[in-house]
Image 1: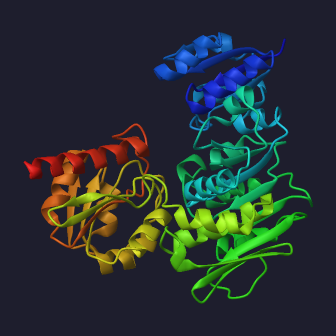
Image 2: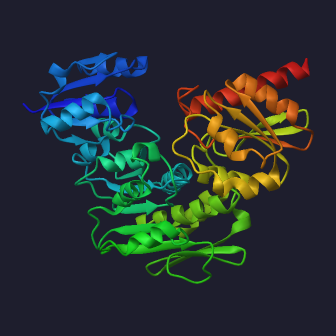
Length: 450
C-alpha cells in the first residue's frame, strides 16, 4: 500500500487526505499548527490519522509522496527534509486531477482571479451545468472529487498551487494578469513569480483554450518563450478590434470560434475597468465551455461582485466605508484607488511581501488625504508615502486604525481598507480582516442610532 502524507490541515489538506483514503492510500496528515475543529471532525469521520502542533519526521519521511498545502513555503524545515530525501511533493490540484475526468476551467493571476472565478462559476451554474467551485475558493477540489461527481470544475489557482502541478492540464486556462506579488516566496525575483504564473498553460494541447490579458505587458513579453498549440483568446480594453474580447465604445464584444457576444458595459452590475477585464475573461471561458450567449448575458446583468473586494460596508457620519481587504498587493490597490471619485482616507499595511509602492504615488497625491498604517511594522509604508500623503497615522490594531480613520474623514469622504499587504501579522487571513472591519462599522452605526 502506497503511503501518502498530507502537510497542512486546512481546506486543501483535509480534502486531499480524504481523497487519499477513498483511493486506498496509507494516509497521514500533519499540521505544524492547530487544525480547525470542523476539519478535525471530517478527518475523524473518515478515520484519517493526523497530528497537530508539530511534525513527527518519522511519520512523514517514510512517505512515497506528499501533498503540500499551498500556504507552506519551501523554506519550511520539514519541506527541506522531504526534498533532501527525494520524496515527491505535489499540490492538491495535481493529486485530485488524477482522479477525475471532469473538464476544468482554471483561473489565475495576481489580481481579479476570485471575481473571475466566482463569475465564471455563476454563469455555468445559472446555465444548468453540473459544475463545482474549487481551488483557492469554494470547496476543496480534492474533497469534491472524493465525494461527488461533476462534469465541470471552475478552479481558482494561486501561484503556490501552480508550483505543485506537473501532469495536470487545464481544459480552459485563464491568466488575468501578472504584477509583483508574493515575492517573498520567490527569492524576491520577479521572473520566478512570472514563471510560476505561466504554468497555467502547462500541458495544454490544441484542443484546449488559453484566455489572457492582451494589455498586460508582462504576459506579452512571456508568450514568445512558449509553444502555444492551444486556442488563444486574448482580451483587451484598449484594442478596438481583435480576436477574443475587446471594448468598442461603450460595448464589449467577445468572439470564440464562430460564436459572437456583445453587451453594453453599462449593463454590468460590477463597475470599473478591473471588473470589465473580469467580465471579458469569464464570458470567453463560459463561451469556450459551450454556454449560450443569452444565458451569459443574463448572469452578467445580475452578478454584483464578491465579498471583501471593493465591498460597501456602510456609512457613518456621512462617510462611506469600503472593505477591500482582499487587496493584498500593490496592483489591487491601484485598481481600488483608480475607482475612487471622492477624497480617500486609506487604511493599509500588514505583512509586506516585497512591495514597490511607486505605482500608487500619482493616485495617492490626487485622492488620498490621509494614510492610516495598520500593522506591527509600518516603517516601509510610512517612509514610502512621506511627503506624498499629507497626514500619516501609525497604528497597530484594527480599532486604533479605524478610530484614526474616523477622526480624519469628513462627510463625503471614503474610508478605504485596501491593505496592499498580507494579513497575517494581526489577523488569521484577509477574510478575518474584512469581517472585523465590517463588524466595527456596524457596531459604530448601532451606537450612533442609540
